Length: 130
Image: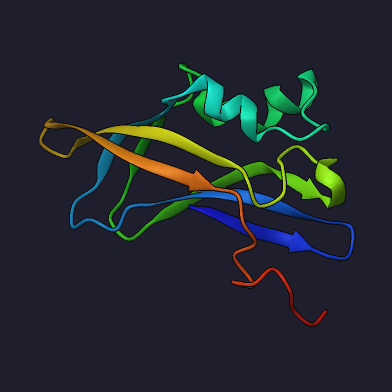
């Protein structure tokens, strides 16, 4: 899931959280973007080359989580939104369909489809007290 890391009056920074909610460890976890068009449509004006390299590294074919125990989670930085779509992601319109590929402990392969939504996870309306 995409989760709010920190937020304030000027913007919100996000992390991508990977949680193994299953009953056995997961191996060789990879993420793949389903639609490059949807990904491009989610970018704000701050999505320059350096930021893309940094915040989309989770989708690189060489990025693999070798093992994630059941109940464990990992995270990485995942961009930011700013007023007027000046951040890496557009405000309230960023949705990215992905496939999560992984293997179970006994070698069976799985492909799970999910849509990542870039929204403030601290407030379901987008407004809250500081």
